[in-house]
Length: 364
Image (cartoon, rainbow, N blue to C red; front, side, top):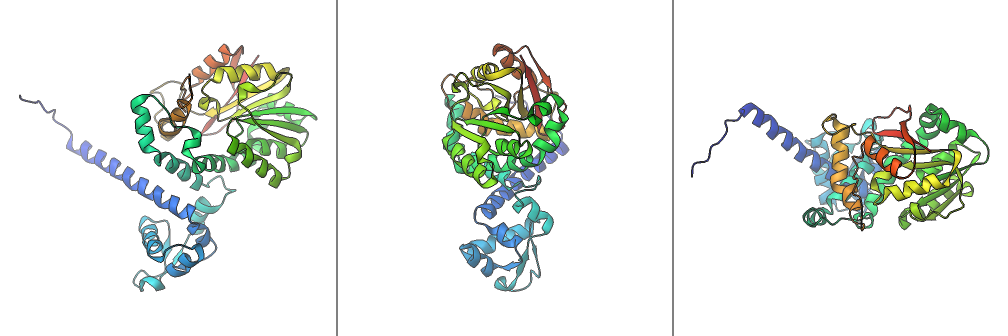
């Protein structure tokens, strides 16, 4: 048998080889960041320059592994070293302030270490993910483990604390008006570790919040965070599926922060929101800023959301029985479809600018 081989553009092949090779290097860099995060190596270096042995002693780690990690970090450009020609044990390593913000400053919008932790947590379940791809099964949020949960929470934390009451909702008059009123009741559905609820409570002192999440570990963490933040008296956290919120609750504002696309049965939860919101109340959904249709947007945001979808959100969604399997790439038309099925008349996009998220209002 003769196989016809199409003539290829060798330059294009070379360029693509470079792209894939860069992806491999990026993956290794991400693993090295995960190690530095989990072992406290970056935090120690952020406090001051260290030799290999000083860093190993301070972080209770093995000097040989730490030495290899330090050299890799210098080679990839994350750390600096005073004099590479000095003996191994005498070299002094430093973390530039600009890099320390990205790796260590938990209040900065540039804090990306949790991002790496989240992605690595997905990679740790790769065998289970491959099996799910074969069978149509899933990998649950609980199976992804603590790194996934804390990575998600800490990634969103600075955005919620710094933007909800100063940037996002002040840009949406209908929402802002409700939140600045006294005795406003808010239902925060899918609250995770509670940072959206805490941010709302801090920004709007006249409100009280019932926060709901299906993940028990997240609710326990949320209560701890709220206590530390001094707002536990105005937030009640409930370990309850959104569609199981008791009848009789009536809220002025209902929020969904980056969670509708994860729900196995989003229509039922949105039906609950439609039931519990007052006639003059508002329902807000924050979800991913993906393109209006497949193929219209191929930028980094779209690539990122497909990555999350393939290895986190879709497998989690499909780990539940009778899941609709939305995935991270929930386009506006899909949310509008869910909202219509839940009894809402229409969906509008709120005038809130953000590269990663789009904000919707669901109208009764």
